[in-house]
Each structure stands twice: as C-alpha cells, then as structure tokens.
Image (tube, rainbow, N blue to C red; front, side, top):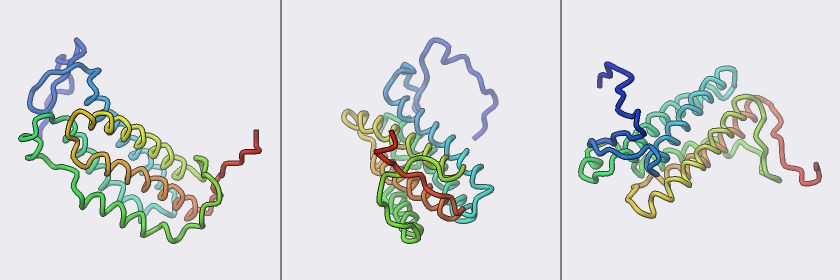
Length: 189
C-alpha cells in the first residue's frame, strides 16, 4: 500500500469514504467504532513505550504489537459495510480470541488472588494498560450498538477478551515491577 498524500480535502464537509467508496457522515456509528479502535491502538502504542522500563517488556511487547495489527484488521472490518468485500479482507477470527485467552492464562496464574477491585495505577506500564482497558470497553460498547443493526463478525467477542487481557496484563506488569496494586477502599471517602 502506498499513501502519497495525507490530506485529500474529501472530508472537509463532514463526510468520509468507507472501504468500497460509500460516502457517510463522520458522525456515523460505524466511524465511532473504528475510530475508537484506532484510539485504542494508539493507547496500546503508549503502553508499549511504557513497557520499555518494565520487567514485563520482553513478554508483553510482542503480544501488544500483534494486538495492534489485529486492531487494525478489526478497524478495516468495521470500515467495510459490504459483506462480499469484507470477506476478502483480513478479519478477526476465533484464532485471535483463542490467542488472547492463551496470553491471559500464561500470566494470570502468577498473580495474587483479587480481594478487591483494582484501581488504575501500579506503575506507568500498569496504568497505561488500565487506560487501554477502558478504551477497549468503550469500543466494545460502541460495536455492540452497531451489531444490533449490522453484522460485526467476532469483533464484540474479540474486544471483550482484549479488555480482559489488558486488565490482567496491567496487573501482571505491576507484579513483575514489584509495584503495589492500588485497590478500592470504600471507606476512603
């Protein structure tokens, strides 16, 4: 793929083209979905950078780079309303969800049992994982709304599992970095 120009002026009036050429409003629900997937991808990029100083770096960075590519595929899938055209593009498949489950299981057994809700924090990497988790949940909610009207394939299941994974990886990075996990204390107010 070659991108010669960044600006095209095609969106200056509040519309954009989907994959296949259909023009839609930038307020379209589909754009909210793949735009939020793009935002999630950017937050995962920040998380990768935060991992540079983390003991969890070597294990989690390759996983996150894979996830970034999967999210780009997910965005393409959401940006393609035509099912025939969408079937020819890379898609989220069950194997991607299975891989996330294996990645969760690989580190979850190392973690202490939860006795309270975890608050975001536990070091820079962990905090960025928690931020990514919240963006993943928002993206999931948006895709669930779209799925009520259109086929979204396995994107809802993938985003659900990814948000679980981001939570576990955040806990694990705090654990590997010997950072205390902040926990909810209902009496703290």
